[in-house]
Image 1 (cartoon, helix red, strand yellow):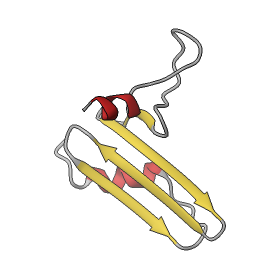
Image 2 (spheres, rainbow, N blue to C red; image 1 turned 135 degrees about the vertical axis):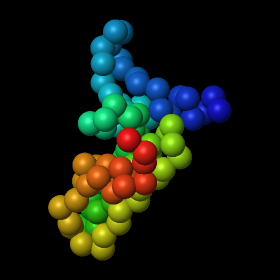
Image 3 (cartoon, rainbow, N blue to C red; image 1 turned 60 degrees about the vertical axis):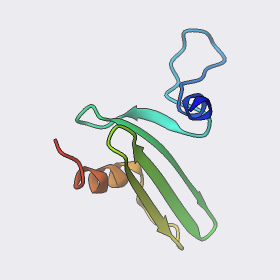
Image 4 (tube, helix red, strand yellow; image 1 turned 90 degrees about the vertical axis):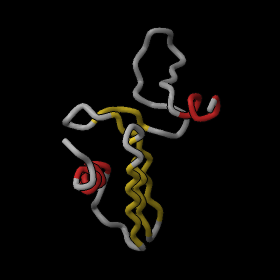
Length: 85
């Protein structure tokens, strides 16, 4: 559990500064205030988004073998289909 806490805890080199970034993960909430964690990236010929709703256990992964225009907001909309409001 300690390693996960470290990954998903907000880090900053400036004390008291908000970054919304853990170790490799963006940290935030969706429009309904549910906690989310996500990581996304692209490379030549590919795109990926991995989004977690840690309180419900819902995970959304979107992958493409081309440079597609999807992002974390698209993953949030897909995840919301599996969550109770």
